[in-house]
Length: 242
Image 1 (cartoon, one colour):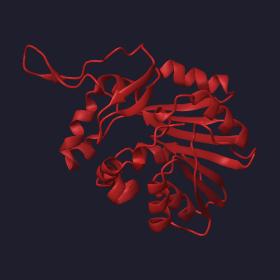
Image 2: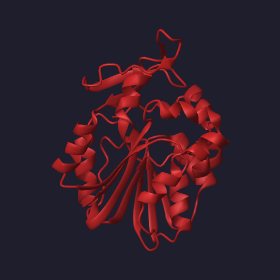
Image 3: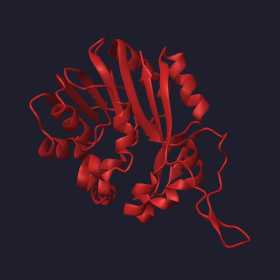
């Protein structure tokens, strides 16, 4: 079973104050790039894996999706999704993505935002998603970039000129990593980019697009704090097809 850190009161309170929690997709700087990877959602049957507060599920419903199934391990997340982002075509449910059993050939699109790096058995989840998609079905997801995960634990360093930089900490050593983010002992699973892409191939997906997200200059001008995201990629985006 995946760690359910989002139902820890202190963590959930901190997460609820993030821009992406307060403002939804508009508060996620990477959203414009993600949207460019998505197909036309009108009439699609969609599963939103790790749906959180349901912001994407609600967006998909507004774009004309035929149905959306939003799944998340956190009772807090699902309660907030039902309260803030309910819609007649959306069904929210509690599910552990480590153990989830998805209906076969029931979806046209599988989507996930920043959830899969919490999973130990990524391969099992990929096999479930592949079987749940119809032939030609799309799979768009984002994860914490492996370089970011490997550098986040190391923290900032300063070189001899006084410039700050992010060292990479044991990038090739895959597996469980514990970080302190909003709470102590948050568990994530580090996989290299190669491992991630090979897992997709092994699950019979065809990778269509790979994006190592960085903010645009316009975004940095509007929000100077985003400038540090130019130092190492924070988010890896992948578009694949069954």
